[in-house]
View (cartoon, rainbow, N blue to C red):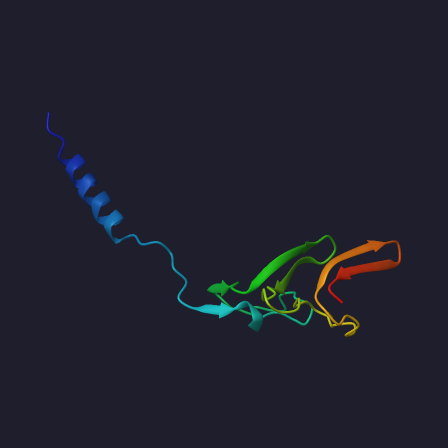
Amino acid sequence: MKRPYLFSIFIALVLLLSIARPAVAESTIALADVLDENGKISSLGDWNGAVDFTGFHVVLDECEGPVFLPISPLDGPPVAPGWAPISTGLNGPCRAIAVSGNDVYVGGEF
């Protein structure tokens, strides 16, 4: 017994699978463009596309949710909201830092 409808179904599946493509975002927006000063996503509006997270890492805060912070360069100071050098009190390279209660101990070549 011949089943001509099986051949038709096979051809239809081949055609459907050959034209199906993975979904790719048509446009990309930089994460820095949608963050507020605290590292939270302020608004994407009616944005429909990909968000480029290059240069950021996420910290999960229990109250605030995800907070995005810039990745610090390896040869520079940390990049974080509110961070600033305290002083130039060391006159040489710092090799170790220890904290005991309210005291901070620093070791290095100075």
